[in-house]
Every structure is written in C-alpha cells, then in structure tokens.
Image (cartoon, rainbow over all chains, first blue to last red):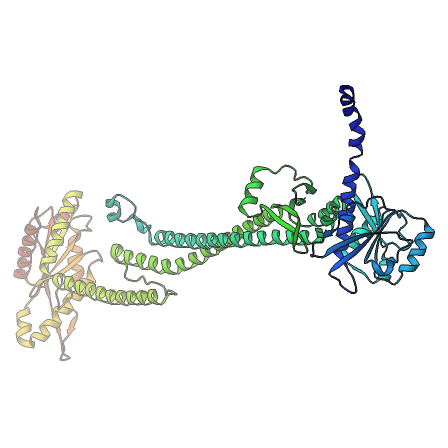
Length: 171
Length: 427
C-alpha cells in the first residue's frame, strides 16, 4: 500500500504532462465563442445553435455552452455530420478532422446556407470551412476563407477577418 | 562745458541723476516689467494649454489603440496584439504601451527603442506636462476584455517646448531692442531741446552771451518753451545793448566836454596823475601845455555867445589836429585848453608842439553868421620832472607860464622857469 502510494508521485508526472489538454480545450472554446460573438446571421435569433462534430478532438467546453459578450446564448449540440441534417438545424458548425471527400460533400450541402463552419483541422482552408483553427502549444489562431464566408451570407466583423488573414499570410 | 559740473552740484557732494538717466531708467523698468509680465503670463497660458492638449492627445491615442486592439485581445492573440500595438504606438508620442487581460496578465508589451531607461528629468517633465501613465479599458460589446496602459513620450513635447522657449526669448529680445531704440529716439527728442536750453541759459548767465538762441524742437511744448526763451533773450539783448549804450554815453558825458568833445578837467587831471606817475617810474618826461584864447571875452561881447562857441570848437579841432594821436587834449573850462604829451625825447621837444599849434591858430574861423574872425592863443608849458614833481604843481606851473605869455604880447608861448629854450640852446 505504502509502495503504491510511493509510486503515485512517479506516475503523476505523465498525468501532469497531459494537463495542457484541458487548457487547449479552453483556448479552442474561447476562440470559437469569440468568432460567434463577432458573427452576424442574415436572420437574427435569440440564441445560436452550435453543432459540434462528434469526431472533433476538443468539444468538451464547447458542449457546455456559453453566453456571448452581446448577451446571446450559445446552444451546443453534438451531431453526426454525415447523418444529421446540419444545414437546417445549425447556425454554426464545429468540425473535427475529416477526409476531403466528406468535406466536399458537406461543402456542397452547405453552400448558400448561413452556417458558420469552423474546422478543427484543415490546413488548406479552401473548401467548405470558413475559419480553420491552428491549434498549437500555447496559442490557438485561425485562418479565414473569405470565398466561403462571402457565399454563406454570414457577416463577420472586419477586424476578425483581418486577424485571420494576417495569420494566413504569415503561415 | 558739461552742465553737471555746476558749483551748486559740486557743493552738494553727490552727483544728481540727469534727466536722460532718470527717464532712461524709468523706460527700462517699464519695458522690462511689461515684457516679463507678458512673457510669463503667455508662458503659463501656453504651458497649461499644452498640458491639456498633450493629455487629451494621449487619451485619444489610447482610445484608438484600444479600439484597434479589440479583436486581437478578444481572441487572446498575443502575436497579433503585439504587432498591432507596435504598429500604432511607434507613430505616436508613446514611450511604453502594455496590454493586460482582465486578470491583469500581460498580453503584449511595447517599449520605444532607446527609452528603456527614463531619466529623472524626462520623467519629471513628463509628470509636469501631464503625459503620465494612462489606463484605457478595451471593450468588446460594452464589456471590458482587457486594459491598455500607455505612458506618454515627452520627447517631442520637450523639443517643441524648447523651440517655443527659444522663440519666446528671441521675441522678448527683439521687443527689448526695439523698445530701447524707440525710447532712445524719444529721449533724444526730449533731452536735446532741454540741453540746448540749459546750454544757452548757462552761456547767458556766465558769459553774458545774449546772441545765443535755442534751435527749434520737434515736440510742441518744448518748441514753445524754446521760442519763449528766445523771445526773452531777444528782449534781454535789446535791454542789455540799450543799457550799455547809455552807460557809455553817461561815461562819455562824465569825462568829456559837451561842446568840443574834448576831455574835461577832471578826466584830464586823472590822466595827468597817471602820466606823472608813469614818467616817474620810467624816468621819462611828461609835458603840460596850458592854452588860453586871447581876448575871448571880447569875441563873446562883440559877436555873441554862438560865435564864441564856434571859436572854441574851431580851436579845439586845430589843437587836436596839431598834436599826435597819443597826446591828450582837454578843455579845462571857459576858453582854457590843455595838452598832455608823454612822448618827448627831451623836455625842449614841448616847444615844437606849442609852435605847431600856434601855426594853425591864425587861420580865420567861420562864424555861424558867415563872417570870419581870427583867433589867437597863448601857451604856457611845464615839463615833469624839470618844473614840478607832482601833477597839480605841473599844471599850476604851466598856468603861470601861460599868463606870462599873455602878458608879453599874446599869441605866443612861454615856458615855466627854468626856460626850456635855454635848455635847448645849451644842447
């Protein structure tokens, strides 16, 4: 028993090194909620329906929901992107990693719909996704796909676009 | 002559200030006071305004940075925050800018290159000018998402202040110089006429020079004063001339005979006294000729007093013409004349003078009624130191000799004893 207790400290460090994960979850949630705060939909609603891909890596905090700076509620919902009809039931969509085929299919479905698509892992950020996160050790930044954003009809504050473009230009 | 060195001032012991000095000191004082008052109040006003504007400007800069930083701070994007912050702050008068998140952790910090160490003076001036530290909240949808803390950079302000101070100083200097120039010009216009007045008054008082006049002045009152002064001088000059003229005529009348214009008895006796003393001192001679008209009473009786006067005038002219310029001719009274001569080489030379006179006398005298008569003279002579040692004795001796000449025949001359002709013949 004593030996087990003695081992515990030795075991703990790996757990501590895994500690950044909750922080990253926080940072992702902050960026996603901030983006939602800066976005305006053609038809305004009391609350924002945020659909979170069940294949994403950092959905924990997102699914807790939040109240945005402008007072709007974010109502999160976990969805299966391939099965559920996201285009009509979501104002915003948080995507995890997916194949290009799936991404293109989804893009075709969402084209022309006011849905803000945020991708967790999409380095090209050319098809479908409007904001593509770049999650690093201590900083979560994003790129912006102006074409997709323009087509969707969702308005995003220019300061945010500038932030995304600047990041895109530098990376 | 320097007017300040009057005896009164010398007695006073200390130098009185001149009008120029006094006015100049007052002008200088007034100019300095005005310039300093204006300069100080302008400086104070300018500094206050500058301080307000600097503070306002810093707040404006803070607001604009805060607005621009909103999105980067919301996203906690340190790199973007830092870059944006540096981009804006570098072009403004900011020496340090820090962005903090709501928990007061530093998101970005920017510092102007070369300003890491704020020296005491710069800091003090920064405090004084109100460019201290300013905090500005960064808002997103009316909710604070962070705090911007910026510190003003007083370098540019200091530079501007320095230039302003130099400009102000130059202006003050220019003002002082022009005030000095104008004051000098005015002073000259006031002082110069007064100095002229003083110079003329002094010349009149000490040298009796009534001919001096003050030149016209540019300033009305001083010009009027000078004109009146000149008028007064004109009157004084006229008065002085008149008095001198009267004095001369009075003196002339006191010493001269009014009919013939010759010296009178008292003047003659005075001159004789001088001549005898001078001759005694220089071992020279002084001869007195006593002349008396023969039968003058008869002329008066027969032809009237006007004829008698005409004869006297004619005799006086002839006697004057017969002697040398330096000899003294006088009318002693009635028909008696006297000649005093000191230019003798020898006592006997007096005989020549008597004979020269007698040569001219026989010419007829033109009377007022047109008729002519012939007058004659008897001459008695005495020479110092031969006949007398004093003036009165000399005159008496000559008088006595004249009577001797009259007793002999009239119209001739006779010397007092010892006879001069004897001396002449002895030679």
